[in-house]
Length: 179
Image (cartoon, rainbow, N blue to C red):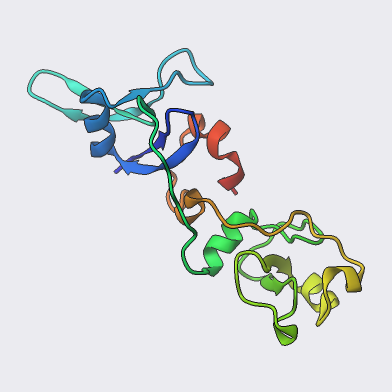
């Protein structure tokens, strides 16, 4: 099953939807397939489609809603994998590319000093940097964060790279999620 990236009318990414939902939105005129930023055609999956009696319906890869929808989204409870995706699987102190073997979670304000395990207080760090920082704030340890911790977007909760279903047209909208 292929997924489609659904964009709001203002071109901001909303979520991923199933291939069937994508075709339904497109056929009902509620969304349009965008012009591919890398090719001359529209953003469709080239290799698959739904067969009908008389034709094959191509599966859209990227759709834009015709009408803007208000997105009131609040970050759910803290999850490690989502934190890793939010930080791009990189140490927020030295910038090293991390894997399951060397990734840790660092509390910016250490938990022993009242820091909470939350989106705004946790970052990914390599084992070396986490040990070096120890029970201090980054300022006290003389370390600089690459970026300030923030709430993840809804797209960080999708495991986009779980399969090899990455479409090249998503790069301009989701490039930061691709590992």
